[in-house]
Length: 241
Image 1 (tube, helix red, strand yellow):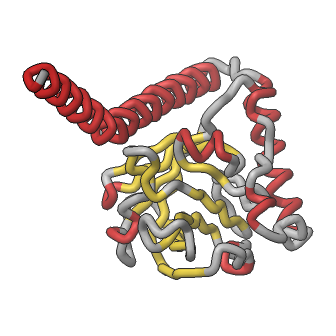
Image 2: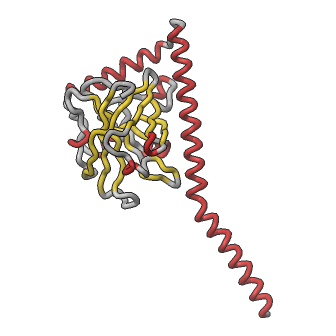
Image 3: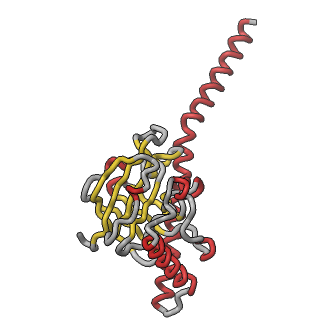
């Protein structure tokens, strides 16, 4: 009887050990899967961008891209003229400015942050689905195409199920470079301000007249449940700065 009990205990301990290892390793595995998906979407984005450039060179650019460009510019001008009246709280962040599905597009661009060793696809609207896949442009903020009177605010999880995303945002310092590539060009920005704000502080992320800004937003402190928000404000610079 004692041998049977010892054997049963050994099997139980072995099974518990395996389950424990699987549980501990799940975030790493899931994070690797998420990062691989991001890499695939980034490759698809650059392939789409290259196809567009080739078609443009041959004078055969698809009308949908021209229509998207017009829609993006109209949106940026509208929210500035209306003083972002639709930006009243975090619930407004979820709604995308433009339905990219209508143009056969998923990611709008790619953000690269060398200091953090991060490159992520950029989606429109900061809903759960978009945030799970990469960086997300907050609704009622500017589309990331640059220009005076714009402030594109990109939110990212501070680590999500093993994927880094904006986890290491505190590595960024004044003067660091951030680039945003959309279907038309690559925009280069420099970190000019770092702030910690309340989650409902929409004034801190509004357009600043005359300036061309890109703002990164994530939870703070790390693994705190989002008590505050960490804000990195970047300003457009010429290439080669």
